[in-house]
Image (cartoon, rainbow, N blue to C red):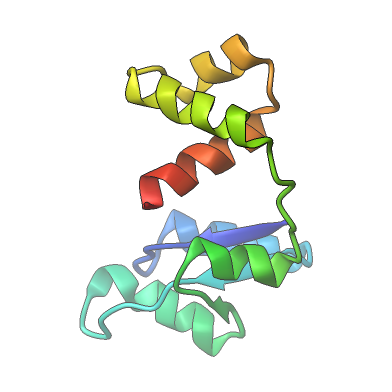
Length: 113
């Protein structure tokens, strides 16, 4: 649905990926950085070419119009407990049978907290 470029020098594989995405009419998002940082020159190039500036995962989700389905509160606390116990997201998916995207969304939310 979209490509997020976090860090792109010039030239770089990230810029190639962004170009391919744009050619396929896939949204290209980029995170701005220090204008003097050579690892961010590509990000600024993408902004000049029309990429969408984002600063958080929430902005990407909003731009794509994705509305996450709320999981039952017990399921979320189970994921938090399993994650705290050292389980990987793959192990949590196997153990709970929940969709991988739901588990990864919750793991990301917990990590951002």
